[in-house]
Image (tube, rainbow, N blue to C red; front, side, top):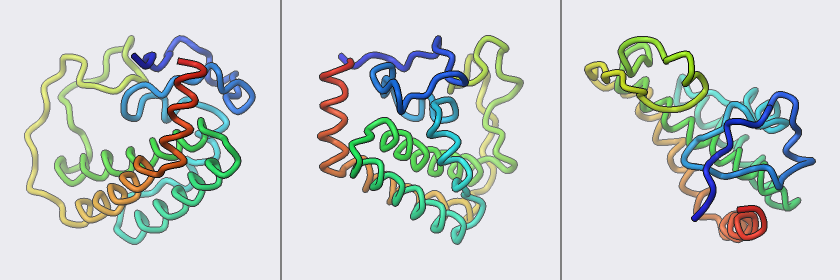
Length: 164
């Protein structure tokens, strides 16, 4: 069984390129806005407000994904895959919830940076925003392509075999 993403590490002070053994894939987008240096490398390219921005962003991030794979940097490739996934999920959130607010109330203080409802009810969906829905579909296609890439799957299996 793969290990869960470790939220206890001091990611702000940790370079996971130098210490890939500390990285755990986790579930979904876990750690996407924590793991350095990848957050700093990928975040400036992450945009989903319009289909054009989503297309440019997803293509750039996918190119970075391929570059990480080529150099055997699985952590970077997985973080790029997570940014593609997050492009999809955030665009879908804005497509379904005007303003992007999905849950009622603030995130509990002890759950900041951790995905989930944390006991908060989901707000009612608004009529779908077709622009955000199209942006989401652009990211979804690149996310699916990344997640199924043979080199990614091989490196992911190797990383889990070596580090958990």
